[in-house]
Image 1 (tube, rainbow, N blue to C red):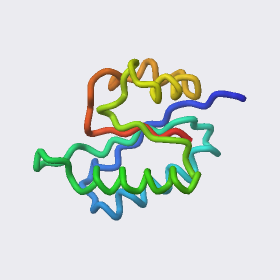
Image 2: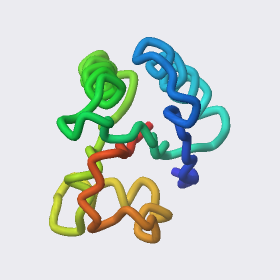
Image 3: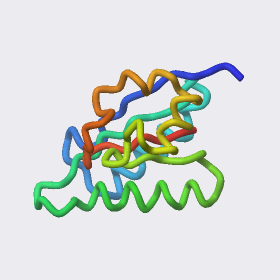
Image 4: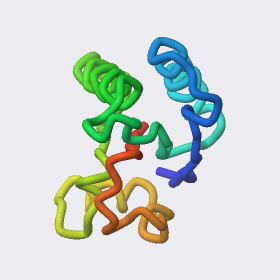
Length: 116
């Protein structure tokens, strides 16, 4: 199987609603495979409240639903994106480019990696 590349998508740059952010994630998941992506790094931010914002919560809820439906392989919350995580090691096999990602080992709550 040919390995795809990592696409980075900032869904929070213009402060969308949570619903609009989910639409952006949907667009990227639906088109990612045809673009040759193996993984998409979603930058959703953590939220200005310091407790995790609506975009982050909705994005992860939506991704869990997509995984359950079999539309994505998996997703890795940024805070779990570590070489000590079996899910991260499995993601490296699918998308070796993830090994070079600057958020690896940073426990970044503001990103999520989606595996297509």
